[in-house]
Length: 496
Image (cartoon, rainbow, N blue to C red; front, top):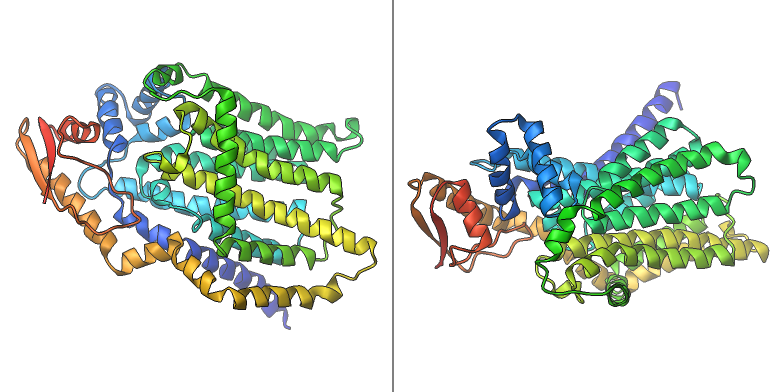
């Protein structure tokens, strides 16, 4: 191979990885083009308009965030993004751009975390680490309903961007430990503080996942004094992240909002319910065939690698505990805060369910890697050459695919990427988006102070796009906020 060819090959490899990453995320990227505002998007716009009279965009966003923190909830990052309030009029271009960016950043954050764990924690080669990272990205876009996470501005502000920040925080914390660079520790701290200002579900995930990593790192260090710098790079960002989480949790607005909650749950009830929801969702994910197949591929990649990671029974048990504790702590704030005993039956819960399933899936991928090295260590102690057995493992994967090929294809078709693709090709997404855009246009063109009645068909095609809910009752929250935004007296949806 010539020197020119050898220099071009790495570039082509990177372009190939980038292309695969784009292909995986592409359906969700396209979905953002059809996004339509609704509900909290308009209520936020109405609230921010008050501050815009005397302040610039950033100052009004900060003022809005301060007031929400005092009167409703502590999600300072989410409210700041909401307070920036891109125009929700006419083309909705501002909102759609922010949503598109969220899909891109989420893809990169998932890939970076999976790659970092594989490369530094499991010592896999770059190629194998990239393969696992792309599989993690694929899982992330197909395990659960994604509409509220990627096609609704409020969901993106309060859940998606903070989740992205938490994933980056974990990635840079691992880098800071293994590479010993202060810049990584600083980035981990910055992203940790940003992530801590999101939904408490996201905050719970970030903090407990970071704590588990700290426990694993600290347990592996015998000479604390000799590694005090590396530990400082870990603990300082963690402390700042927890401080942000405390500021979020202790917000006066959380206690004000709690007074409006009809259901109450004590800590013990919420914990038990969180565990029960965990078992239900794990069972559902592990019977979906696509996830088990991906976990099997990850197992083969890890066990057939040249990496040597000593995993004894103690570390295996701790990993299992961590894989359970992280998702349970993730969902606990939702169960406790809302008094909901079954998140699957809770109205407007798809964003909550997605984050929960996402965390479970990532935990299972990590656990699979640990288990692979545990098995590899057992085989090594029994003088079994794993590399020589590689073809047997590959045969198992091929047999699995052939045996369950129908189920795998069916499961993929039921995944979000396939469903969104069908929505786009079948134009159901554009039909729904255009219909709501036309509704908003009619309200905007109506006479100020008038009562607006708009007939909307009750048989609009189903779509994975986030669709706002308006009813035939003008005093309904969402109807009122739209009417206020477009300066009409009331807005009523009539069923056609």
